Length: 128
Length: 253
Image 1 (cartoon, rainbow over the protein chains, first blue to last red):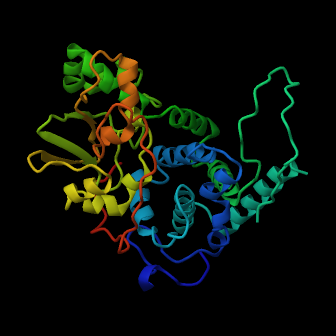
Image 2: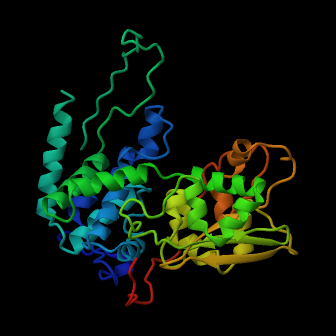
Image 3: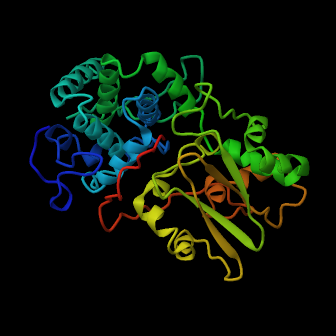
């Protein structure tokens, strides 16, 4: 993990997750791109973004496969609530999942950054 | 940052063999959409789960909604025999409204233990459910929990000041009504069977199901004619960050 030590109220170690902010995830917290802002901008009435079902499935799969227990994840999400308080759900749920996976070494920041670039290039290619 | 693409000049001409207007959709790639995909693909790449696992759970999640719970309540209101099964064998009663708690794996999910209790409200007794530990919720029958239900603020306060918290949701209970807060645990799920409201005599099961909203089955609202949706609820932030008392040694959710 990288980034400054700016944990909740000076704490950097939660019981379930390292609370230090992660530079890569800090760069993604653009409130203007949350579903709460996107949906009305495009006159969409769906209460959740399409990717929410996939996020829930990822959480279920991680728990079913033994990589990240659901209860441990929920405790870690609670601890991270104030770290990501500026972002509403479900985006906060996504950020905290990524934070927990990074914190627990399931993926590295470099790997995630690389995959984000790969996905971005792929998705934006069809918009040219 | 994500690239924006908006074709403001597009009009649906009806030349594609259908003449209804296209449903609005977000034609913009967000950083969060990219992050979700990246996390998922990386997890698959690392062998944490398979694409097939994800497909199965996605389909299961996509099919969840409070509609099955609404149907269960409405059916119980008009069918006394079914109502008794709702209390004696809630999982079998769930099957009768199309929900098999054993899906999608054959033994449920790791977050939805196959044990459920239905709590009957009466004019003198009101139930409300919570999970103070995390956010245990009867997902198979009620769909996904609302964010306020998951928030530490709700979980902490509903067990301490239940009447006040219900009042914040707009539900004012007379003092003579007993109030019970049922706290879910790792292996028990609860659902509230609300009181059938006045003014619904002669209604069909479909009509009744329409007024049994998610919040009625959590216990923060009561069904009433004309009320068919819950609307947005406030999410109060916790005044202090959460630091729970310790890792549960035998937690297996």
